[in-house]
Image (tube, rainbow, N blue to C red; front, top):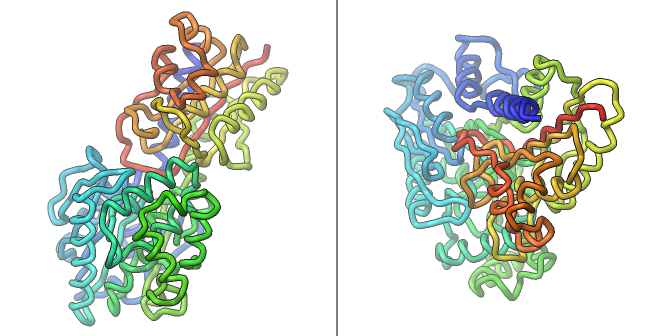
Length: 450
């Protein structure tokens, strides 16, 4: 089984390598500049750059944010050279890299902080610089998952504390990323197309690493340069659905209610001139990561089954479904590798530590207790699962027994959302450190015949 654990880790690292943001940005820019193969986006479709964006004399300002923004910016510096007039990117702490022309700032994630507020102001300043450059100004934006929290730009009348409280409440409620971003977009000067509006009339080209199912560009990093289909009324409906109307700061509720009554400007819509001047391209996503995992698994001799249905919903429920699928596959003649991708949620009810990948893995381990021939790895591609130092975990039929011998109970730890302590005791945590990419989570199940 130790060999299968190493195989699972190798397959996971191949998934991460397939969405390394540096090579993806480099390939895109080289293709746009005619120095390399024509660029194809994450769906495999050929894409041309916006007409005139890279014309001789264009002055490019780079702004961005997210867990992958540092390697994206480094690649932009390498390819654009003297055409680049600098800029700023904001990354999660300990996710930075040395940059020469672009300023790098670090800020708090997932809860926004004052460093993020200052970084958001600098990003808005960069957009306004592009707007002031008349015909030569161009804004190149680099965004990945995490950008929403890293660029807190409270609307007038709101403070950082308001955004922190509503973010924490949404996280604890188990709200999916789409619902979280719907609310945050309507409380922000940058999200929901606000950055594109600040840059107008300068055109924007945004290169994106997607951490949202289906790659909706308005949801990734809360869509700073994307038209927003949601409304203030939709944001209020999220709070209602999650039982949060009475738990968010009064100023947040007042802002959303004023917007719903038409007293505040809506987020950018497709009819806005700024939206027509913005181009958004997805370079990497969860499907690309799974393709990298599949290629590595086949090279290791595994028969691969990619599960089309994404991981979603409560992590522990998904973990049990994954375990049942793996248990049912042990009658197959050949060893098989099952691949899942997506992002689950955790409704926090206890005071323990963990993340969605660890909670999924622990729930699966409980269902796999005593089973032979099965290894399951579940981890976040960003290398950080929840507020912990683990990317996720690698579990098998012995996981529960190893921790039980140390006096820990799987069911009790799940109830307290304390998967980290249990899996650490079992020796099953997966620690990779920051990967500087972010395309949701990957689960890898290896099954051998009974």
